[in-house]
Amino acid sequence: MEGTIRLNKYLSDAGVCSRREADRLVEEGKVLVDGEIAVMGMQIRPGQKVVCDGKPVGEKEKPVFLIVNKPRGIVCTTSDKDHAENIVEFLNYPQRIYPVGRLDKDSEGLLLMTNQGELANEIMHAGNFHEKEYLVTVDQTFNAEFLKKMREGVELKELDVTTRPCKVEAAGAKTFRIILTQGLNRQIRRMCAELGYRVVTLKRVRIMNIHLGKLNTG
Image (cartoon, rainbow, N blue to C red):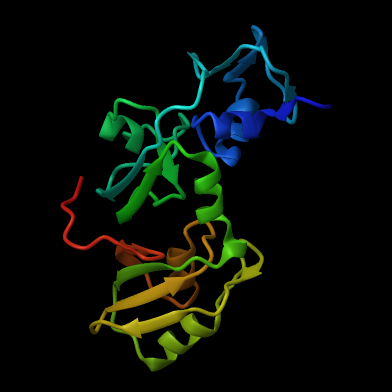
């Protein structure tokens, strides 16, 4: 329909969240359009009033792009299923921002936060093959065969998928660096588990050309 915009793109363009997060909020009934609970895929016309998670959605805010060193124990999702503190609450930034991609609760390191929905979509989209680098320590020493299998791709039976070939190199007897161009759920932990290893620490140190460097935790 001319002059309309899909709801998830409307929320993304307004700097509220990514399109994927917008769909999740709609599914949970947290988005209202003209006082009615929104439905997935609906179109927004000029002049309609949209409220997301109790907050009116207005004009675009000033662009925000933050580099954060996420501590362990903080979650990146804003859903209520995990009672741990989420990254938005933790940062308490004066503008509404959200994470670009995720780091699970037990992982730490580089996290990007923004209110620019389209930018977040571009960075997160696996088809763009953006590199993400991690430093990982496992519970036992590994050998060259382990590194070879990680590089070539590991079949994740739980997800019914084989991971993309990636770059892996040893950084110690139990520590390695890995560079991924995809972001499956808990991918590195699942890859290691399939090969008989348990991840002890996992830190993201780079996303594309953005490095964690010496940024302090938190």
